[in-house]
Image (cartoon, rainbow, N blue to C red; front, side):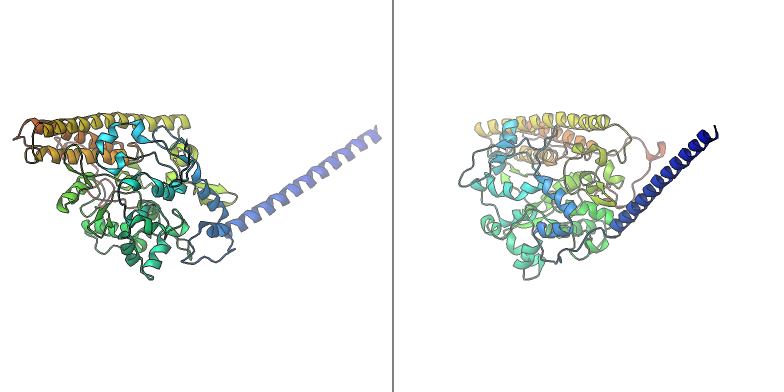
Length: 495
């Protein structure tokens, strides 16, 4: 009995010692792991190569930042969401266009667009958007190059330009910008090599975000001046959170080519709401082309994501573009921004659920509900503008002159631009649902007023119906927006 008891005690003691040894090894491993993670966190990157203000090739940056570079390369992915992205359409390469895959044609998806843009290059070739990896080649090989002489200005939003601008301007960014604007596209294309790269958004010495596009530097200065802030220097005065939107706003904006020098200009001197922009184009007379079927001097909206986002709840809440399109992620002990820039719908977990405590299915359905409603309004507004164009074309055939159709042409110009503003903005209304609905509603009204003007020579239009509330502010709770906030008449976000 004593011998058996002794054996059990020895076995228990041995087991306890074994467990203690295992625990000690586990604790040591945990301590080593914690130490390694702390070291990782202290050294977020390794300086394998020296980066300078002329290091343009992203592959060289990738030697120091392999995680970010791997994400950057993944923008070649083509994944379609319900209202955006590309299916990746195979094509036979030609001597002029070596691409074997391209995006699907929006003109084939919606033939009304050919009437909408009649007489303009977009009526010849307009396709779904693809990732940043394709931004230069898709601009280079679009069929629009065959029907119009595009200037070097187009490079501003389709290539890595910081180094080419500096070289062209002998070290002066603005002078290089001015020189390239005036070049023929084919000549400017020879000076650039990459789509957007690291150096366009990051200082190579400090890695801080920076704005390098002259169009935005000048545009945001004009916008701030309209708010009473003179000589605004975005790189010195913007907050870090603002910069996480501004670096995207360098290109995702409405713009036009000003004067014979084709200077890229953002029409923000009066503000960034659509009425502000239309007023600007009236005060600084501009047309993108003359509509082939109506003779109206019309405008083509580009991609005003920055302007529309600034009217939405996310901007008002201090959410930056990068929070949703480049959300933070963990790589070991490192917290980095995901440089695989894409739709948040393809990354709901990190893009949306960080703030919204709902299932992926619920959040996705909420987005689609907004987009479905915007798409319905967009279709109705498009129908209204196309109907106006049809009436004006018939009136021309019946002998009506420019003088007879002056009011109708102005209404077409405004209605068409407003529909295009939502059409060209790549969120199908999600960035600012109420603003998108408001714009499309006014566009429908203007198009229908245009039809009345075709029929009634003395018709007086109501261009911008009053938005004055019928309820006095004292009769309800009102929280005024802070000065310069996103929802103000011409404000941008202030965080």
